[in-house]
Image (cartoon, rainbow, N blue to C red; front, top):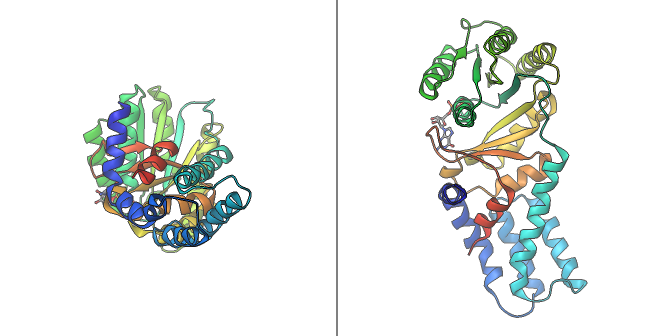
Length: 308
Ligand code: GDP
């Protein structure tokens, strides 16, 4: 199983890995003592690989300090040093956002993010995985702004074999979530996964709507929503960070799903997102199929990224 996971991750990360290591690998392949110019080039390479300017500079500054203090001397120590620093960063985001313990059922998960990022697809992918783990799942079609969104979720729900609760176009999304929670309770389902709108007439309206959805969830299940996952499209690169900042502030986001990692060379953006937002990546999407979702594992990710 672990082998399949790493294989899938590597396939998903192929472009990212290639571009990242093309740019960054030169510094790792050198021999002899670590030179200041080598670290300068590493810094440029990290920035060029979408790791984020601030993070790249900070990371290499730490390495410069390691060199000064004699903790890092030869070039063959550089890759492990970068690996360790990046892992530290990713693990810190997880520590700061521990997974919520579900004391009261059903567990409620909201997926938020702008349209086209892959929310609906990801709802279905998570549902499929939970079902395979033995959970009973109810989906909530709370993007009532677009009729097509409800239909799309219904198609996916059928494919993965999960019931979906929906109402007419324009209905109150909070009412849909209320119904979905009631339905889950009635059939003793352990999970409700909610697809939400990515756009309304104004951003302020959207944030108000998401807040109301959360309030209703909290009223119906103490501690809900347990997870609010911001879905970001990796192919938009650093643009995703802007989106994340707009959503994160009001929507109580406590994790990220990065989709379309299979279609981009910009996977370094995971690092920039984790660093800028302090949010852990929970899942990565590596394709359009129902099985193309992987739980994010910092070590596997960093290893796949830095592998020669
Ligand atoms: P939503 O508007 O946020 O609900 O986005 P959708 O779920 O409708 O997805 C938008 C498009 O992105 C669809 O064509 C999906 O098939 C595609 N998509 C979603 N996730 C992935 C992924 O991980 N990889 C690839 N290649 N495509 C994806």
